[in-house]
Image 1 (cartoon, chains in turn blue, green):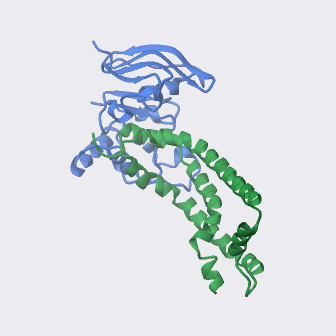
Image 2 (cartoon, chains in turn orange, blue):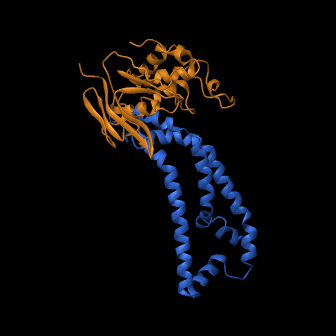
Image 3 (cartoon, one colour):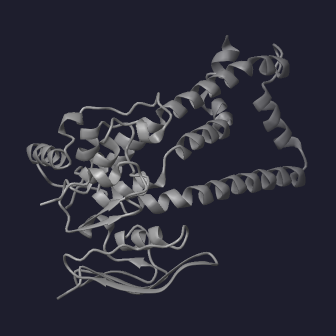
Length: 188
Length: 146
């Protein structure tokens, strides 16, 4: 069976600092992989390379049998890799409401407004935060976790990788943010 | 009043404060995080949509502050203009051009080299600073094509 994600001899260096050296792995469909290690060992860098946000210094990344990245080149852009990414800081867009955050992730698709609305509603339902869709960011509170209504930060993050139901998801330290793990609902 | 109109309200005159406005705007830009652009790139949000609906609203406070500060500095410069350009005298800009026209060629050339070198340093610094952000924006699609 063709691996969903296959990494071959991947290396990444920033100036003289070697972050990843000759990393290889393969994920079959339905398989889960957790990358563990101390801070700064390159976990997030590996996810960024797989997502196509950075080109590798050496090695190759194959997605569903297609060469997606090779040395110094990103051949398949991030939005065409059919995967979702949950960033360590959840990457919530602060000027948008919860619903707008989820809908903004569909801005680059060719869906009609009606389809987008349906997908947003569905994603909010799946993440059990439908009633919080209208809530907005409140800069008055300093704590980043409490700037959003309860369950919304992880909810939006999980919604954004649910709204298009991608086959693969990369999550950077998903349990490091409060309440994130509890917000993730089984997807269809 | 003519002095105010031709000096303080003149756009080219106010360009002198562009570095101040740029520094303030850059500080506002630093309040954004690279992961916003990364998330937009993963979702295929078009670059124009990201800049218009996400980045611009975040930047509005710092851009407003920059505009106000430039206006304040330009207004405060009125006294300097009056000092350098008493009634009946040539304006400061004209005085500079007169010096450039009449000074020895070597002196004018050295002034130009100094000016270009300073501009190059500013541009290189800005380019290096912006490089990281440009790399995040590079993967965003320019239109909704998927």
